[in-house]
Image (cartoon, rainbow, N blue to C red; front, side):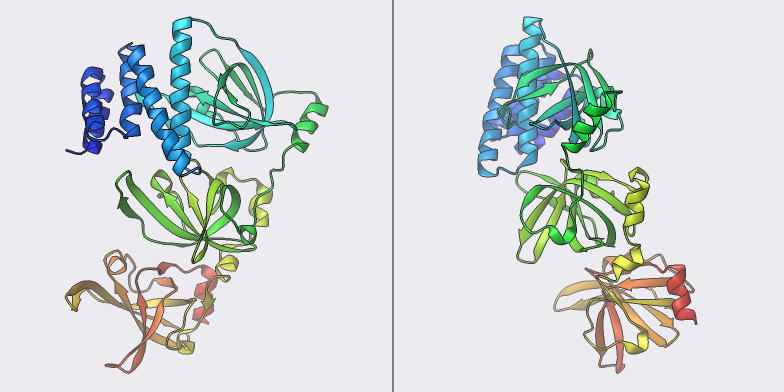
Length: 432
């Protein structure tokens, strides 16, 4: 068994509250891989539940040392930073639990960053926000029921009975933590001058896609999903999960984005989203956005009316990426196009083998007011089709190929393509 397997077994025992067996599993994971930060971290929680505070602190300190190495190698590793921060928090909590003392403070600030809540062991949940005034910013950690508050960037937050903790990862050297005695108030009643002062101290404007031109972990955009690609699983030595990719567009341009793990199932084609704390990365193919654990996605229901009103429609933004072409205007090797048509034939899928590789293929026929054409659907596209004769569809980014056997052009649809419902306006455009 690998250290990952023992980690999973340990987490299972932890959830069953069999903490001694959990420790045994985490010990075996560490024996296989002494640099397994997850095993050290989980071992600290298990010993904490056993009230063995010395071993708990030792485990969290060992986890911190591994997190430090990871952060040193990759300063932008948000998961390692959050893991380190939480390990420090647990060490502080254990120390305070033994000392039986706590010094509480009250603080007011404007929200400059919001992360999604994270579920921990034993039904605990935490959320990290960042507060700012005109002089500096500080992170605050909210727990359990307070993670359900509707907090947005630009809100003013009052924290009553918070307490200061040392945090070497913070620019100011400390953070604000809360517990069951703390109270969080969103947009409290304050003197108008103070509200104005705080509002003016922070710029809540979004970044235009065209202005994303360097690596960053602080990108906030408002965009629509123009093209949504397949979701697939990944597994590396240190991690596993799922990822989906999409093309996003705002009024200024387009960018490819990757949605990781729990974020992978969120995007829906044509929908508008505000994405906060995304990571921008320059590649040989241009700029990319990565939306993962530290990012936040706000769907259309959470957007302000003026935000939705200022963003162009899906059809307008789609035209930045794909040019609409009628069937009779298609030319071999056309790229960056979309074709709208009515399905007139759907054939059964069949296997096709070439050079020892097997493919799944399905042929459908479509027509518009200028002509008709066969569409070859490959692999996942062939397997997942749910359209029927009479449906109107739009095909994004097909390849236009010449079939020597039939002497006709055909559309080839596979990876990098999308088939979606045509809008009423698009149906009208091919029916007249």
